[in-house]
Length: 256
Image (cartoon, rainbow, N blue to C red; front, side, top):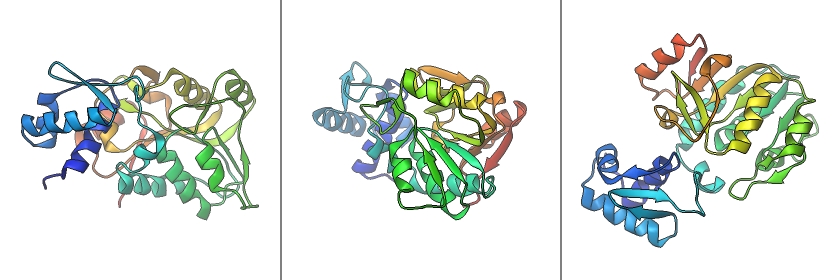
């Protein structure tokens, strides 16, 4: 089905979050003419979301390597909700859970309401706000610096607090996954938090929709084999499922 110009532009920004993109690659992936892609890039440049370069585009300084949190939340929404439901089934009532940066982990936070863990530890202020007024669940938020483009906490204060935390289950986010080499973040600060909580949890799962597979971002968090499992949506191609299984992790794909 042909995408509308608005949907195309959202997809372009999603692909751009991992670095530069070429007109040829975008035309092939979105199944439209290069003329249409150039028109889309011109429109996005006028909005200040990217910079056009010879043969393609790069993120501008304001967008850098990531979207605003609100833009990301609207991408692949159904897939994220399905992943969240699969993640919630892995949590026992009364468990202590860490929820990482990202809009997929925000979806997990909402799905966990039905499970009722005893404690949620998170660096994401949107996740923390989801549990305001719910007395059954304690929410712990470390100190730190709030990100410019996302409601996440980073820095030395954040890492110092989390270094004294132990959780039963951690759900980690990422910007990209290359099964043979690892999972990646577009920001070194968020990568440091994910890497720490990988060690501070009894079980760690990566939650990532299929659009994040097959490329790399700037900062490698860890090899996939360091995880207990990877939770993805049902659209994940078989080649990536097989590659994940070769690393020895559990591969969990949502049914709906």
